[in-house]
Image 1: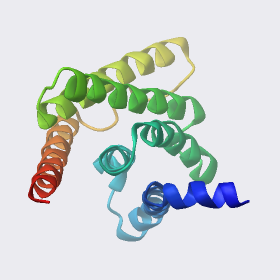
Image 2: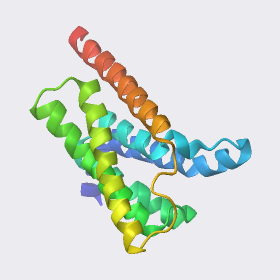
Image 3: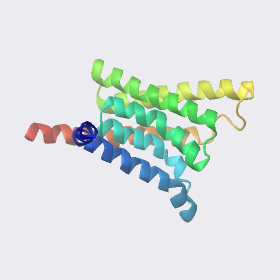
Image 4: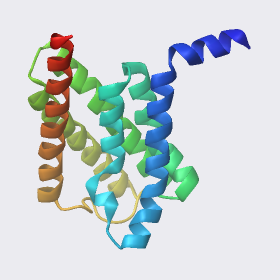
Length: 174
C-alpha cells in the first residue's frame, strides 16, 4: 500500500491532469445537448490529448490517446467501437509524429504539431476509407468539413505553440 501511495505522490500532477481531462470530456455530450452547440466539431478529444502532451509525460499521453476514444464508447456509446479504435490509432500516430518532428528533428513546435495533426488525419481517413469500403463502418468518409478541420488543426497548433513558448520562457526566467 505504501508503495502505491509513494507512486501516486510522485505522479500526482499527471493523475490530476488525467482526472480533469476525463471529467471535462465526460461533460462534453451533456453541455452539447444543453446548449445545442455541436462541441464534437471542436475535437475535444484531440484537445485533451494535446493538453496531456503538454502537461504530462509521453507514456501518459499514449495512455490518453488510446483510452479516451475507447472510454467514450463505453460511457456514451459514441463513436461506434471500430471508429474508436481508428481514433486511438490516429491519436497515437499524432503523439509519435509530434515526438519525431519536434524532439528528434527539432522542427518548431507549431509546425511539428500542425504536421503531426495532418499526418494523423490522413492515416485516420485512409483507415476509415478501407473500413467503409469493406462494409465495417457505415456513413460518410468525412463528417466534419475539411475546411473546419484545417482551421481547427492550425488554430490548435498555434495555441499549443503559444503555451509551449510561454512555458519555455518561464523556465528560462527561473
